[in-house]
Image (cartoon, rainbow, N blue to C red):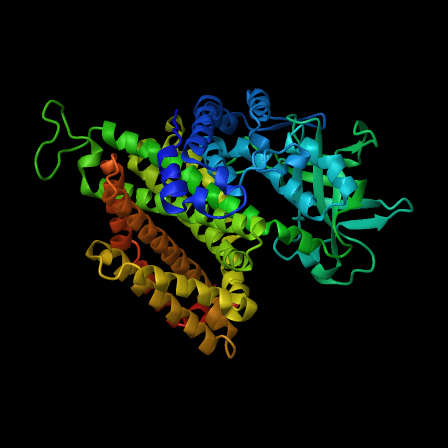
Length: 591
């Protein structure tokens, strides 16, 4: 069975050496001293390794079962969920007015990575509740917040988001679910939703569904969509549970992975619901939580890969295969361990350099969300809006690739279920699809985000990269970082210029290159992170840090990324500048 240990040391480095959170000037951050964050992360790591990780294989093998209209979760999930609630982990960054602890979103993300790495399917029950909580907190009336949020914060009640229907996924304008207004101000919701994660289960006494539906008078397309609160059990005025609502589970989806999470077909047969936010403005309410939700999926992409990587490293150090080409390194054994071989080192370095860069990128993104919300920083809001599709799309693509690399280290054993590596690969695969498939993320980035607010956010990003490189002028130790970052940034700007020059006359020229652009920008973002991490590491060494090995390893890992991964930007630029013709050359009937 695979094991997992939270990488709290690297998290502490990011929080305090890189982001310097306790002096960042963001309300609530001043309390985030190293001793405090270390205690929180270590406690989360203990829960993850002792409670959640042992259930990961259980959830994968048992899955969820629909029995007489009730969804049963895998053995041990109920006790683990109680432990999460009792430990206050579900309420970490929630509003204290509703029972939350009021900590920064950044710290919640760090803890979230730990829990996802240990057991992604399990963590989705509380993670989806947090998303529903955020939507109600942002758009609900005072009465709705008082009625639902306290028990959602504690996860006595959980939450879902119901978007997709059998005939429409990304194109929500085709939605058929209807909301009929009633005399008492409520609505009757009728329709079917599919792919609803944690749609029903036995872990909570009530489930608060947020359902997108069309109410009369809204017009065609997405303009007619509204968002509704539709509880599994109706809630009485005194907060007690009333009658069962007309919502039921039609089926549990048979999936490639995340078997421990109940992905349901949900049937709404005149279920009672209440409008959340403004009528016919449901998309606006939904997109309020998109930056947070999509960053969370990007986090899932690399967090599952972190667990896979840890096990691949352990296997590479233990498994004896062949002899090192430079001479025997294990003379007392019949062969040397796998890790002596350069190709295994390449694989592990690809994994390590991506994972540490991805963690830094995600933490920085969470920091921007905190800055935008807690400090009302419009520039931070614009920047995280620009970066969100990159966080989601790039990190999940590369996270899945990293799981495959980790699985490959095991050779044939990686393909055998006994070793558990295939579960990481299967679980990670969904992150590239849900919360907006990655092709859609690329289209959003190129078709919408680059031009947002006149392009000022992408220009600010390029200026940020330029300033980072300039800050290290004259420091020869940083030259390998800044040279690679400068080159990649210029290539990214050249790609953007190609879109500007060709996109208006031939939109396919831009959209054919959108996926490559998303990956280019991902590499530039990780290159920026590695440049900052190298500078922070050199600063720590210059200040006489005792743990020299940690900082020297960090610098060497960063150099690897800059030398071996950043050159991919040149390839992506060449693809983009080839235009639409190679992509669109065949007619539909030629495929």
